[in-house]
Length: 470
Ligand SMILES: *Cc1c(COP(=O)(O)O)cnc(C)c1O
Image 1 (cartoon, rainbow, N blue to C red):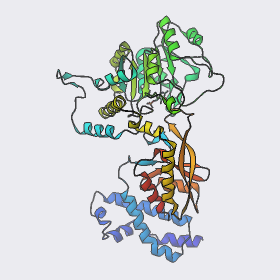
Image 2: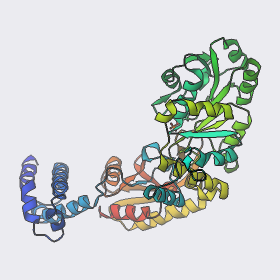
Image 3: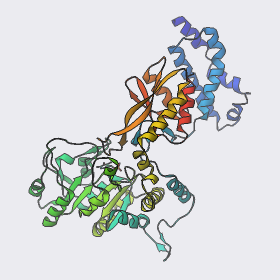
Image 4: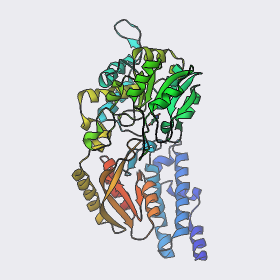
């Protein structure tokens, strides 16, 4: 076996040999005659040869004669595929995981009309910070403020880079060098890099923890109030649930206590949602509008979680508080970019004029089970003739992701795939390393493709990739 392996490895050509041999090949000459493409071509050859070495180390199903004769055509096919991959670092992937707000894959998808508006704005000058009526300098926030006030019922609004920035700005503006009271049950960590205690520290505030992990009462906040107390902060426990004997204090109760003691109550709502998810069977949680109605001085939430827009941090609340945020020097450092602002404006307009169907995140969240079943069956049928794999239609559950509704089960249908010979991890890797990365979920010895998060064109790419195994 070892001798055979050595013999095959020796048969593999060197990089320069591949280049020389393909120099006059029609399919490759566009790369070889263009000086700017040459490094990419060489890199492609290196990668393909590496893959060939890995294959030699792994399998010996064919005879040496077969190996030798098919080697060059194999190398050429692989190389063409390698060169067909987009050159950019950021590229499309197929999300077969069923996680709708997949943080690693860019969270919320924007609606097509939103994407078009962003593209238009990118290529043209705009009135980003110009008051057209007066010809004088304007504010970039006006483009979304009225929409946000209308949608949330707040008096004023502004936007920053993301919700982490919103919380940082809010705390730095109102509690720098002072105390912020937070329940021990709400000291959340989101995505490993956002931790309430750390953000407070970064904002120059002192955290005063009250209550216990499972129970915090209004009297706990009240007892902790001192001369240094600047803010009563409520944080949404986005990505976990404490069950059993629990008690937490509502935003409205904090507002009432704050009013009595002259301290503003604020809330980091995390995801927040304009739609009432309960009507679709999701856990009952106050909508953004209901949260604002409790009378909090400020409420912050993300633009790219359940809102379904671009990465941004939205702050709504009382006018005097929003004005003080805008006056903070940090606002400049955390400021929202014009393309993001364009995406946010267009998304908010969809909420004004449309419904659940118009926001891709909500369309995916509300896909009927029979639609999912027929999409999954279609994929199963398209793969059934593939001799290298076994495919089955199965029921499963999708996830919302993005730290929203962590305990919500979204029943779905998946296409379950197995290699006739080969492991589940090999199959997952094969899908991921194709011309378009296909992300799937492994469950026991099956690779699952959840159709909930597939987009048009994805099915064809999945069938084509798996066809390469045949
Ligand atoms: C997600 C989340 C954040 C961070 O929001 P980003 O927009 O990702 O910065 C902050 N707080 C809570 C409660 C969250 O759920």
